[in-house]
Amino acid sequence: MTTTLEDKIVRDGERVRVPLWLMDSLQRSVRAHAVQDGFGKPAGQRPGFVYVAGLDNAPCRDAYEGYEQFLSDAWKADNAGATGNENPPANAYSAYVDQLGDAWRAK
View 1 (cartoon, rainbow, N blue to C red):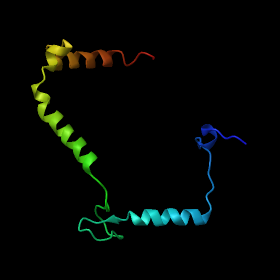
View 2 (view 1 turned 180 degrees about the vertical axis):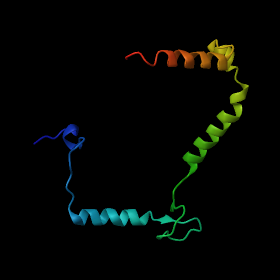
View 3 (view 1 turned 90 degrees about the horizontal axis):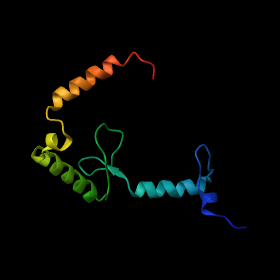
View 4 (view 1 turned 45 degrees about the horizontal axis):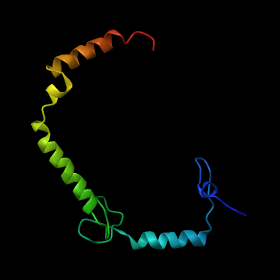
């Protein structure tokens, strides 16, 4: 019997039954990546933030630094001339007034 990749994909609304002994091995792998509190101790039933032990935060840190750089350089761009909106607040207000004036019409 030949199975395709489409046969192996679980679609929306479908269920997969997993034997208990397979779920136990999953629990062991989850436990290996246990969460810790801010002091590096195992997180229990205490309120507060938790962190995954041994997680590499480099991609998150790089993305955040890129976002900060974008925000810090945003004022340097000449956005008003690029879009043709010489007076953005007035244009935004007129668009708002137009939207309110047409709100009663059926869509």
